[in-house]
Image (tube, rainbow, N blue to C red):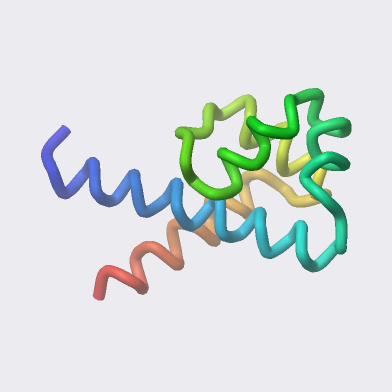
Length: 87
């Protein structure tokens, strides 16, 4: 993987976290509630949503389910945002 690939993937992670944070705000719920629903520690949820920790696929799916979002749609939206931001 070259530097531009790594930067693009990092941008996807950043966008996924931003999308999920936005959904959390939209729903008016706390990280504690997401953590309980996703079977994660609250600190883990916080770090993932702040993009302070890389998100695994299973974590992303669990967070999407907890936030009632389709994981494939979140990835597609993140890709779209990332590509638009790189122009």
